Image (cartoon, rainbow, N blue to C red; front, side, top):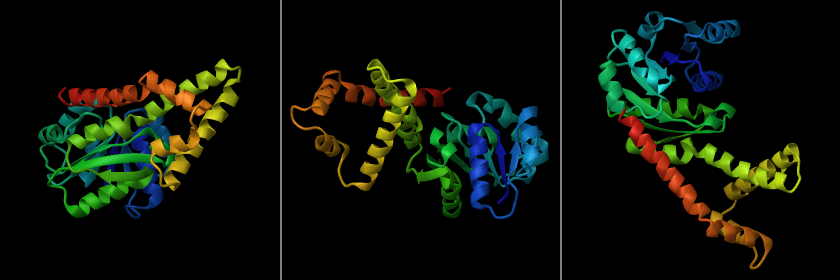
Amino acid sequence: MKLLVIGAGNMGLTYAKAINDFGILGDDKIMILDKSPEKLAELRADGVFEVFEELTDCVPQAQMIMVAVKPQHKDGLFEEMKPLVKSDTLIISVMAGVTIDSMQNALGLEKVVRAMPNLPAQLGLGMTTFFAATAVSETEQELMGKLLGSTGKSLKLDKEDDINTSTAIHGSGPAYIFYFMQAMMDAAEHYGYDEATAKLLVTQTFEGAVQQYKEGNFTPTEWMDRVASKGGTTRAALNKFDDENVREGIKKGAIACYDRAIELSKI
């Protein structure tokens, strides 16, 4: 199936490169459209993709279109796209907060997939969740899993609202991790470590802990208990986190993220 990616920003280009590298769509070159002269020149110099700057030149050729633009640009884009898309064109959206129903109405077609990636997709370690409209066949949904999983892993969801709940966990989750990492680095620097040393201490600790959790059979709480002995230094830190309601604060943050996702979907 001929794929067009609209928007060669971070996420659009990340998917285009990963899908191309894995050869998921065979020998057909992926089409990319962007408005930036600098980006167009860069893409043309690379010679990997078919590069376009006008919708009329590429949309009619596409059987699948990945929309990777900022949500605030969707209305003008969809207005231009509507007379150009075929009724059986499959739309894949990675725009936050844009509902399937709104895209179906704006474009006058039924086959829409809504996806939520996260930033580590740029490293091939991403997590992308997706939900497909009923008009998208099982075969097409399997293909979506492969395309979206090319940047790491993908997960098909059972209902559209799960896009919003998963946004609160994996979509925004890297920022929560960075928040905690920054706090640990701040603590390291409080004790006189320079930034480079603090970064080494914190990043290696995170990498090791994540790998140990993935390879082990314990829950995070059970791992905490294995690190923290009664009356020891680690238990003192964990008790302070509990006193400050850190865990509840993180949970409330994720709920606030979900609430905002719902608000954005109504705009």
